[in-house]
Length: 326
Ligand SMILES: [Zn+2]
Image (tube, rainbow, N blue to C red):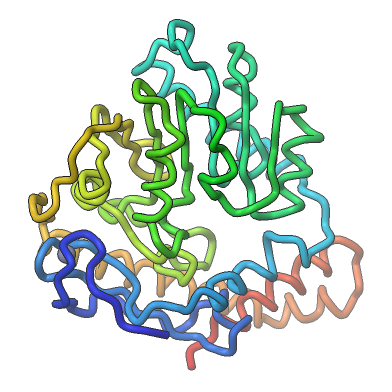
């Protein structure tokens, strides 16, 4: 792990915002504690110390990715279709998709492919890039998209073509070097093209079950201002922005210059207050989950070996077990 400066304003003046001592993802690398800091210069929230590259790739082993042989469930795919529809609605109300000259879309972190499928239905050529073999196969099999590449995004891969729209839905906050990927996107985006980004919102933290919003896969926690600043540093100008069910979104276009050292400062006290309230709420819920998982009834049901139910309960207990206080 290494300490890092703020990637938005470059200052080295972080204050601890939240410490999560029960991060279940870190068990894959023998750790349990993750610390989020807030830059006292601009208010950007990020992990520090930050995990090394090899450690970041191990965070996902247990649940999502290829080491787990379980197929993607229909329920999961349907949930993703719901999220994709709300994102698509945002884009299609801001851009007239039928009149775009370049109807090629590149979705980085394309997951089950549900977002791309909506573009396919209105005549766009759909290209996905997805690190997980399982998700890439799922996207191809479920929606017959034009291209799905199982790899990490690399602009050199697309030197022969440009895209009218590039999208990252809940991907940017997981990427180790956002500026590198934004530069790559700049190179593959048509001059008239648009960049669509969705990320979790620091002003609206939400728990996923008993897993904290402030978990190690989220290397950064953006606000509208910090995302705008980061994009501006990397030659993008935000044209539209707003709130979506899972966080915040921006639609940005290319510009010719970087605006280094010109950044909006977040409401630091408001972020601190919202985060502390969130932590109290989350800790209370996590306590209840632990109580249920360790209850006598739960133990008896597992002992009875009732198919499905005992499997679900056992898996639930395993996840809660790693959330025990250390
Ligand atoms: Zn900063």
